[in-house]
Length: 274
Image (cartoon, rainbow, N blue to C red; front, side):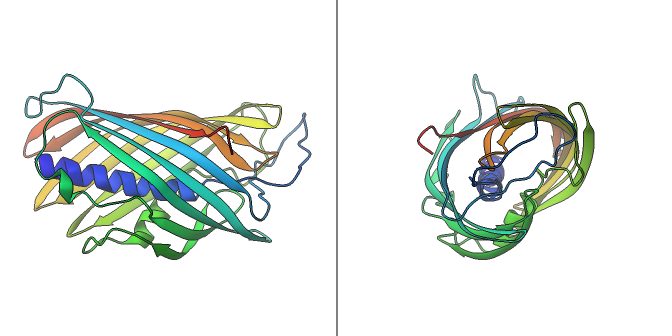
């Protein structure tokens, strides 16, 4: 059981690290209308560098895994650089600078977790934040059966609307997320409803919520569950990058006929020296 949770933590870490690579970076001076419908786009300039701090805290309520605090707390820093902008294709390099993981209970085999520090990806995205393809990767963990492509593509689920929107407008985005990890993997089906909350000083605030279904197979054991994800994100339309994001997932998971409750909170913040 403990090794399966370590595997899930590793898969989540990898997927979120690649999700940060798909977040927009910083652009030239852009004039943003203060009234009327607005096209939400990330339009960065060549050479812009952004540094992000990310954290995730996961707790499990189960008699099989008693704990007084979070089961897993992960933190990492990542640097992103815009390599080129050609039309609607933005090439970005994301590099993981440091990763730390704290376990709420003693778990043997922690040394088996893949090393993520110094891992980097070069990918292409469009101004809506959709990952188009991965160009290359360096320093990725050598885990048999793990697909870097599925991690990057599966992380592209925070997407800006195609049409112009005004304050209070909503739109939906459905996406499957498949993360190949060794002989097993994690698959998720999500359907987000986004709301354009408002615009102030070039910062657009969005909220999102929706149902989630997840299935995981690892070490011959299957686990499934469902729940909800809610959160908010702020994007800087002048500089063309994500500024912050918070989210919470609440789910009920079933494994070997037993049901447990799981919640996970995440935060993403642009560091002030960026």
